[in-house]
Length: 115
Image (cartoon, rainbow, N blue to C red; front, side, top):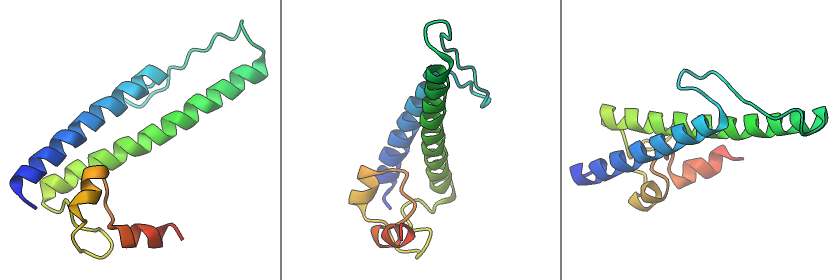
């Protein structure tokens, strides 16, 4: 992969990392991974509050996975393995990396992993 392409990918990944961290903070998650969710329990019944808390935790779980994927991709850049499929070792097409900078699998291997 060209150095310019790596720099562009790294910039996109750093931006994505900052966005995900901000979204997690907005949901009440601290940088050290602790949860500080405040819901107004006086305005709704306990079931609604529990449901909202579950929704927030589910959102946070997805964001946490995105953050881990981005951090792993940044690690692959540092190791010099970014852009290589972790399953088959072939190059991941640039179009895929442009669409999903944190992709670790080529399209063929990704489709096999979903089965």
